Length: 155
Image (cartoon, rainbow, N blue to C red; front, side, top):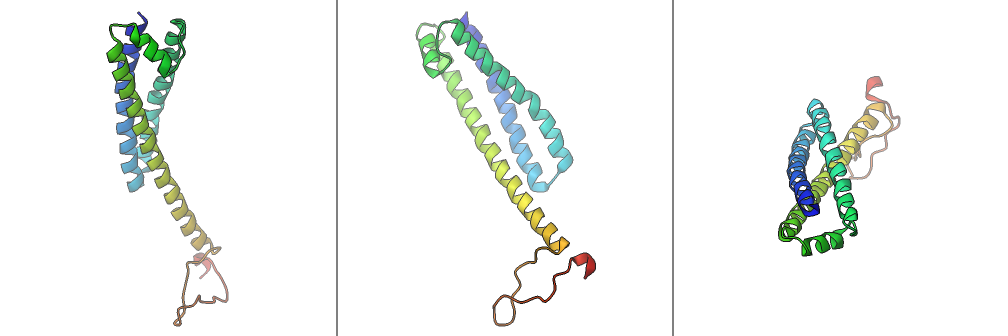
């Protein structure tokens, strides 16, 4: 009974993780295009998938604990050793783990892009506000001395 419940949870979560990975990849495209409405929609689509994955992780832990096993990889191996579905359990667990790792890596990639975009926007705003100027050089190649810094709105 425990093994079939776990197998069902793994199978469901594999489908959920595949959907999440697809959304994260779509999010990357939207980030590169700076498509804010699409990003908001994707965020709304990701939230229930993340909640479901978290809920199922808790259920998997409870199933293992109810079987008197640790809620970790060793517990799953022990359950699989005494089950006719053991090989499938371990294979599905590995597949889910790999998908979640890919989701994590894609999410980190998106985070780097977000930080780069924030820095770019911050730099442009600094220039527009007059607090920051781009590096300017004079005819000798040394840093130009600008007597007075004024925002573009006052130039």
